[in-house]
Amino acid sequence: MTQVVSFSPEQKWATEAKDDEKHIRADKANASLNAEPVTLTGGSKTIQKVRVGYPEPSSEMDTAIDTKIFHRYMYYTLGNYQFTQLGESDSNKSCHEFYGGDSTRLPSSTVRLTYDVGNDVLEKTLLGCVVDEFNLETSDELSTASLSMIYRTEKSRKISQTEQEIREVDAVPFIGYDYQIELGGVESAVFNDLKLSIKNNHKTDGARGLGNRFYGRQPNVGEREISMELTTVFDPENLETVIKTEYGDKDLPVDDEGYWIPSKCKLFTLPLKLKIMTCEDATEYVILIIPNCIISIDPLEFSGSDDVEVKLTLQATGTKTVEMKDSTTKRTDIYCQVVNDQPEIVPSIKETTPTTHEGN
Image 1 (spheres, rainbow, N blue to C red):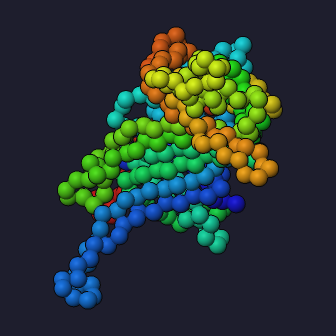
Image 2 (cartoon, rainbow, N blue to C red; image 1 turned 180 degrees about the vertical axis):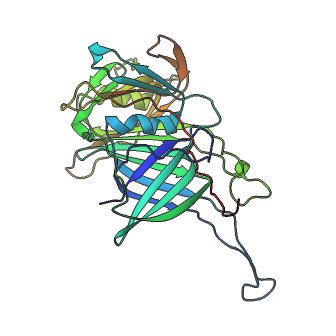
């Protein structure tokens, strides 16, 4: 199968980067200019005038995820990147750190998608890609990462499958039992499903400019929305967490008769820490921290003799700080550390070969 994806970090938005990144096998992927024609009927029952409309290029893809690619997804989703080469005591691993900041722009990439076409391959090169939304889901199946991106423009070419060079990294994909969750500093193993969502809400209207159909400037990031959904079964181990969430107070006030009662004004918040590590290689792992979460719960509902399902939704706030590996602190809504054997992410520009015209 030759349908693969690569992300190459750009030095300058929409300026093609070198094609030397490792390939990722996507379960599904698409890309489209989304250019609808602009029409005018002019009082007629039929279209009388047509112009080419403004494109709104977008791409989506779903992939398995592992320690070898997690840091690349965080680079484009969060930016604010710090790299540390670890020593021999750490098997010469690399530490990639990311955190959410207030920058109006994120790192962009040149994304290359390939599609099988008989004995050939169609390669689409997307320029100026920025991640608008990242989602991570896990349960009792392999973990899935999905990306929604917007980009400036694209170009395509046809190559033979024999010409295509597949560059992959061998890695173990994550599955539900690789995840360790701490809520409020207490480890919990009772959750059945996890969904993480990071939305950057890019503002594309302000990226348009006169004189060009395509975006004239890199779209700015809007308000970042980070949430995590955790699903479990209602039981004695999570009873107090459920009531604290509903009533809004970690101290669970009681009335004169010993009943728990809703808080007058307090809001129930707590930190979350997620560690993902496979048993095949404990030297590589992902640590994700949301230093302060507003926590809410779906209404408790029973149906016949089925288990009562509890779904907690945690919304990140930027009110707390985290400590980086160099001992500096950052006020942020999310922090991610990835330890693996992959090199530092370094943006590049593709070198072009000038065309020589006869007679010059």
